[in-house]
Structure formats: C-alpha cells, structure tokens
Image (tube, rainbow, N blue to C red; front, side, top):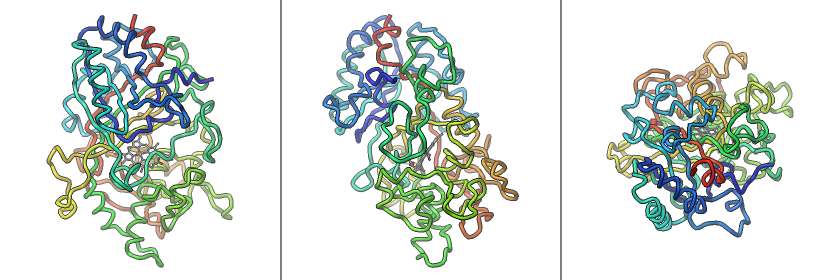
Length: 462
Ligand code: N7H
C-alpha cells in the first residue's frame, strides 16, 4: 500500500492551486540546513492526504521540496539511488534531450549549481510570498537563491488551459493503489513506475529511505504562441461540411490530439465537443482502438487521431498493444503549470512573440517517475524526437510519422530546423506538412528527487 502521509503532495495529484513558485537554491551550510530540515522544514511539507479532495487539512500554501544529485552530495548523502540520469543531471543531457545546445538555457540551469527546489503553491501570490519568507527565515544563510520561476493558471475561462489554448492536466495515468476506479480511463499503471520502492518499481536495491519518493523532471519550456496560431491558421484543413474556422480548429486539434476544450479527437473527430471535454467521466476514456467500427485497425488507422498528434506520440495507448505490458511501459505523471503573461495585441498583430524577456511565456513542466530513463527521457527521445515512431510498428509505408509537432526537435539541429509530419489531414493521412519554426524552446531544467517526507527528518537531516 502507498503511504499517502509520506509521499509529497505534488507527486500523485498535483498541488491543486492556481499559483506556484519554483524556488531553486544552493546549499551553503550543510550542517545548518540539515538541522533545520529535520526540525522545521519537515513539518511544513505537504503530503498527499492533505491535498486529496475532501481533506480537512488543506494548507493555504502547499510546500514540497526536492533535491538534485549535487544537492544530495552537498548534504553528504552519497547513497546510490540507482538512476544514472539523476546522477548526470539535466545540463549534461541537454543535447541528448534534443535541446539546441544550452545557449537558450536560463543561466541558473546551466551547470550543476542547483541543489534543490521548493515548490510553493497557493491560490494567492501573497500567501506564497509569506511562506517563502518563512522558509528563508528558517534556513537563513544556509541556502542562497539561484533562480525562481512563478507559474500561474491563465485568467478567466482559460484557467486550466496551457498557453496554446488547450485544456491540460486531463490525462495523467491512473495509479494502482491510489486511483479509486471511479473515473473510466485506461487501466491503472503500477505505482512503482512512479513511486520508488513500491509495486512495479523496476529497479531493486535502492536505499530503504527512498521508498515513497519520486524523480521530478523540471523543464522550463517557452511557448511561441502567435507563431503556433499562425501556423494553424495557415494550414486550415478542407474537410467538406466544416466552416473555415472549424477546419482551422480541426488542424490545431489534430496536432495536439485534443480540442481546446479537452475533448479527445479520438472520440470527437470532426468538431469540438465542450461537454465531452469538461466531463471527467468521458474525457479520458479512450485508447485509439475502435472495435465497434468494422475493420478498424488501431495499428494503422489515423483518420480519427494522427500518430503524430502530441497526445498519441507521448502515450500511444492501445496503438502498441496492452499498456501495462512490456514495450509500451513508459509513463509519467505531469504536474506542470503555465508561466508568463498572456499574448499582447502587438504580438498577435505581428504574428510574432516579443523578444522582451518580461513577455516570455510557456510551461513550467514537471514530470514524476521512478526511472528517468524509462519515463521522461524515453518519451522525449524515443517517441517525441523520433520521426519513425510509431510508423514502422504501425506498418505504415511511405512518409513516416515525423517528430512531435509541438515539442519535437530534429536531433542536433539548430533552432527552427524544418520538421515534417504526416497523418494530420484526415482526407489524406499520407500528406506531409512542414513546420518551419519551433513552437516550444527549451530553457533548460534539472532532475530532482522528491524524497518521502520521512526522509527529511531521517536520512537527509542526519
Ligand atoms: Fe504534453 N500542449 O498544449 O501542446 N500535452 N505538452 N508534454 N503531454 C498534453 O491530456 C504540451 C510535454 C505529455 O496520457 C496535452 O492532460 C505543451 C513534454 C503526455 O494521452 C496538451 C508542452 C512531454 C501527455 C499538451 C508539452 C509531454 C501530454 C493534453 C510544452 C514529455 C498525456 C492534456 C510546452 C516529455 C498523453 C492532457 C496521454 C498531454 C501540451 C510538453 C508529454 C494540451 C504546450 C515535454 C504524456
């Protein structure tokens, strides 16, 4: 069974607030830090039970904390967590993740100086600031700030939608031993794919104190919204019976795999269905297979949802067969939040993102898994950035699927190398579309370990 009092609140369920601060720090005085971690910080950290709906103990500001490999070393914790990517750190892996070098990286991420991150979430920025001041007062000079990023849900009706306009946070995998089965969706995944030391963790022999922890992949992913919108408008489809606007929206939805409302195109292939998008009983209950359609083959049919759609690229569901078996077992729990301001009128009318740094916007991407190589890194390298995936498996001859149209990068290329995808036009799924500019730019990040809360007053403070 999962100890929900020990697993940090962000991991399985997200902190369920509209503002979130990521405060990246370096440890300057390990002895003081360790002692304060055990005596004061430990009791501030929010567990999963506190966040669950119906909890009577929801904090005003939820607090989580995670450490990089260099952070554990700074604390003189040299135990092997048995995750080579965590040990390398993300900076060393920038090019293998497809990033165009590290020239676009935020300076704070370039290197291995970040020892840890506090995740502070609340509905009001003032509450976050108060809690941060409290933590800084407790820790004093034992830490210094390296960098901070403030995330916030978008305003008004866009709340819950990422900056391209699509509802996010709908399709995290159900987790065995945590999910109550009340939501129809693909079969639950073993908890050990996310939570170390629990059933289905493929790595054995990790230190006992890590049980209940999870690796946190952080990425600051800048989004070029006017450029994305222009590309979608320029490539409106020509499906008979749809208006120009509907054909434009259909093209965008076929790049993502969901409509802006969240409705999956696998269930609503031609027009958005906002009621479906909003209905948690239906909006994740699909797997691309349609036994009810005579002759339908999930391995080759992409008239409902293209193989190149971001959703199907990053989780092919039944495309590869049973999801919990070998071969398709690559899952993450996403818990990101948008950052940065809304698009300005000047940007909209010029179809171009401003270069003003204060207008940078994107996704503060957070993914949890028990094994970075088979979670985030596999999905990024072997699916997103792999133009062949899944076309050969699907028996497609001719044009390949192409790399993910939203976040894929041509390996080793300079920024804005053209990308070619197929499947997007339902009238001719062999038709190729060329994307000349990148819509998402990696600004870097780091790999962290989100320890079980017990370790904060145990192994990490002694
Ligand atoms: Fe994606 N987007 O708006 O385009 N993503 N993603 N992602 N993503 C998803 O179903 C987006 C990124 C996954 O279970 C949705 O909850 C953007 C990375 C996975 O069927 C939308 C960025 C990685 C899923 C977006 C970005 C992934 C998923 C639909 C960067 C992994 C679930 C919302 C700026 C390496 C698939 C939902 C499933 C869904 C977008 C990044 C992976 C709208 C803008 C880096 C596994």
